Length: 109
Ligand SMILES: [Zn+2]
Image 1 (tube, protein in one colour):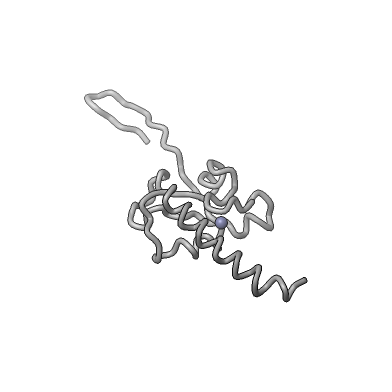
Image 2 (cartoon, protein in one colour):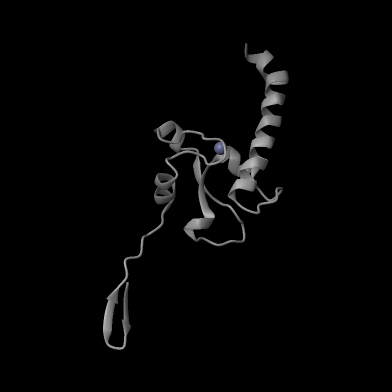
């Protein structure tokens, strides 16, 4: 991108933020549950999540999430910021794990 101001041409390098850029910044891990998306099997489940659904596409509002956490962070939880959202997701995951331990694990072992 080039900007011309008072006859002076200034080149501005604008980083193109893609899903891969966000994934790389976040180490190809879900910021909520640390799901590893660095393999093909894992990468298939990575998505870009908006911390604030109404906060736009600025990279500061975008994080790497797994599909499951992305569902958990839908419209049902308060999303003040990343840390608050991480705490809420951890509580939801703990409840889901408890359900799994009690109801599903006996079926698969
Ligand atoms: Zn996750």
